[in-house]
Every structure is written in structure tokens, then in C-alpha cells.
Image (cartoon, rainbow over all chains, first blue to last red; front, side, top):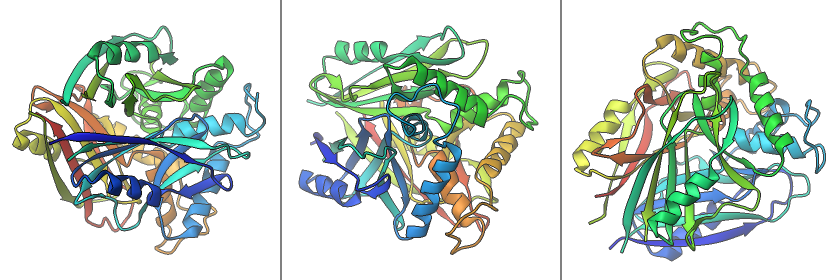
Length: 139
Length: 139
Length: 139
């Protein structure tokens, strides 16, 4: 019998950049007791995003953070800077990555590949607490 | 008892750039009568896209539009220009943003954050009518 | 009565770049026998991605491939190059496009627009076999 489960995950990154949240997500799926379904993560912010990326190589994560600093830099020709120089770049980096991810669940686990981790991508320097809505439909 | 609802939203932007469609989406969810579920938006085009962004600051929206004009400019070295100089940049801007968004629904509403709005991102100058498929599964 | 279907699609691109997989996806939906639902594709890799794009103009596909080679080039200032010069650009191009796509299904078919095709975007030169998880919930 199909059913749903949902929660809101509250997370504060320790610094700007990638923070892995795979463990928290697996825990939610595990506690739901569902074996097959569709898991959805939704980031409730416009200056932080979600990313599935390489979970093993710290150098790849550093390169990825630096890349987004280069293509959406702090010193761009922005009109909007209400909250400082990292305000508008945060919106741009969010637009270029994902606000939402859905992952099929099989045998009680999201079907992540061996090298895939789920990351919160924090784009602000002051690292506010972030809310990620989790939803699972299945059985 | 889980069930589904779906519709096709037809929208024409008044100009190239961001047009908020949050209200239309909320209306669909409201009319479905569902309290908990998963909402999906799917843009049926390759030269327009979807974006969740800052809903309060017009300057942030202008910066965002100008940013995508800079990183996927009209005067690029493109081979494909069947429909004019805004043809290929439209495909690139679509590839860099989202064709689809899924948002969990709780208490009868998508769990958008305070500052999040749902936008159609129109990339063509002639702003054709656009179709966005909406789907909701829940109860 | 709502139910689920899922499978893993194994695909090897013949070269780096876009390979259309619309046909394989339609086949899965067709075999499920479901008329209404939500289809999800999830790419189990961090150096290949998914994209919905123009299915008719080969020039648009070439422009798109060249564009991503320009904005995430092989000769960038990367620290991570464990697997060669196409290693880090592959992660960046994956981050800029989609790891997952969900598409509503109506009348037994995903609601793709006339010009939309579903593509695997292979970012590695050695084109390893790729796994795409497919999931369908509906009836």
C-alpha cells in the first residue's frame, strides 16, 4: 500500500561551500520503513542549493567551489547587494545548480551511485540555518 | 487514499526574462484539495525554463537576467541560428537552469521558503505562449 | 489503483557529448502499462548528466557541446585530475546540468514538447557504461 512520509531537515553549514548531507537523508529513508519509492529533497532558500557530487575526493570539492566563485564572482556588476557582496553571487550560484533533487529508492535505499554524495551548497558567508524539505512516497 | 491531479498551464510572458507564476501554481494545488503530496512542474520547451528565485527584490531579478545574457550571450560563436540571434542562447540558458521542478506539499501548500517564488524564465524575444505541465500526487 | 515500476537503464555513449535516450525511456513507460503518473530519471554518476534539449537540429547539439567545453574547459586551474584532464571538467559540467529529471505522464506518454528530447550528456572521453535509474509512479 503506497504512502507518504515527510520532514524538514534543519542544517547549518560550518562554512561557505559544500557540506555532505547524505547520512541525514539515508536516516530519513530508513526510518520511513519504505523499500521502494521516490525521495525528493527541496531547499527552501534562494542563496543555498543542492548538488549531487563526488563524495570521495576533497580536491574535487575544492575545485567545484572555486569554479563557482569564478563564474559567479563577488565583484560582478550587480545592482542588488542589500545583504553584502556575497548576496547576488549566492542567487546566481543557486540558479546554476539545483533547488530540488528527486532520487528513486530501491531495496530501502536511494539509488545513489558509488561515488555520489548529496550536498548542501552554502553560498553565504554567514551560513544561516537552512531548511531542506524531505518527502518520500512509496511502500 | 493517494490520488493524482494534473493540468497544462498556458502562459505568455510579457517580455523576455522572469515572470512569476507562483500564484497560478498555488491555485492548482488548492483546487486539487490535497493536503500532502508531491507537486511537479515541467516546462514543455527548449527555449524557456523554470527557476525558483528571490520573489521580493526586483533588482535581484534584473541582475539574474543580465547575468545569463553575459554567460550565454547572443553574439556567441554559434552554428545554429535558424530562428535568429536569440535562438541558441535560449537553448543554453535553458540547459543552465531547470526544465522541471518538484516541490513537496504540506498542509495544502508547496513548502516554498519565505523568499522563494516560482518563475517562468522566458529566453525568446518574441515570447511565444508556453505550456507548463503540472502534476500532483498525494492525498 | 496507484502503483510503481522501476528499472536500471545501462547505456554507453559512442562519444563524448549528447546521446538521445528518449526511445529507451518511452519503452519503459509503455511497458509499465500506466496511463497517468510521474516518471523520474536519475543518473548514477558524477561525470555524466541528463538534459532535455532540442531533438531536431544537430547544429544546436554541437553548439551546446562546444559551449560547455568553453565554460568548463579542460585546461582550467584544477587541483583534482586523478583521472586525466577531462576529470574535473566532467564534474563541473554535471553540476551545471541535471542529475535528475521528472516528467509527468499523461495518456501513456511523458508530456515532452514537440521539440524536446531526453539526452544522456556524457562528459568523459573514455565513455564508460552509464546507469540511469528509471522510476514511475501512477496508474
